[in-house]
Length: 329
Image 1 (cartoon, rainbow, N blue to C red):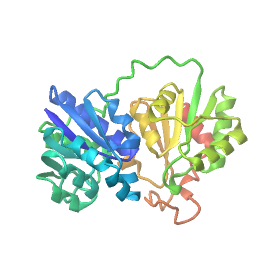
Image 2: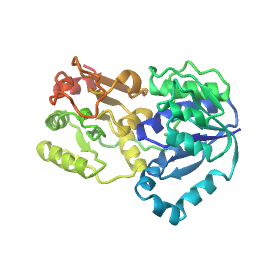
Image 3: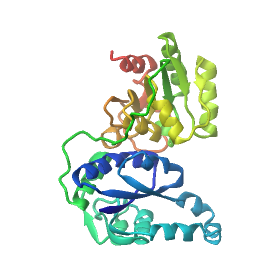
């Protein structure tokens, strides 16, 4: 059986889908997936043994230069790639109008969330078969339930398994920790001085501290954290290179971000800090994952910017307490 999976973004959402792919692989012998994903994230699906072909799409880039995408032939090439195969099922597990529209361009029966379950209810109009999945459940559970219903097997009761083969990873030589301070919402950012203080505590206990970054704003923040604490700023890394750094780390400490979810999926000893977002629905899940939740009357607010302007949800998540939790205290 060959399935076309539409799950284009974001990094965390793509990683949340991996356990569902593992479930399907174990329930249906010989099943294979082709996966449509944003070009910047195409490395992730390639890590899973049930994914045979990755079809990159560039919706984010094309939206800015639509005419250029058409004239250059990129859009035509993408459509040709999509239509190379007739699929037993085209499964849109994103539930957005853009992903449902992409599904409609492929050859095969389309399935996805029903109008009560999709993030954008109009997306359900594009599917031949729709399924109800409670929106209040964790994102990983929602993916696993959708796959089980659409592909005709019972959802396992086992813990989520990203299904990634990590046997190639070399042993750790020098103990180090990685700080993941970057995230897409300002309301999810832990105060900069907290990161510097946390790095000093780790250094004092004999760990080298490495600070990751993904864009220029994050690079400048990483430099300030390093200058204040003696930490080391990582270079610009691909997702595969970043995965290797995370896998070899003694610990990874981050805020709610795609990289934090990646560390959890890779089975790294990780701690993720939650304030504005809801760990019950989008908390990082992994075999050595711990989520620390900030407490305030307004949290989780699910707002991109703090309406209070004070980020009260971080008041109880102080560096010393976070470091003690990292060490099992």
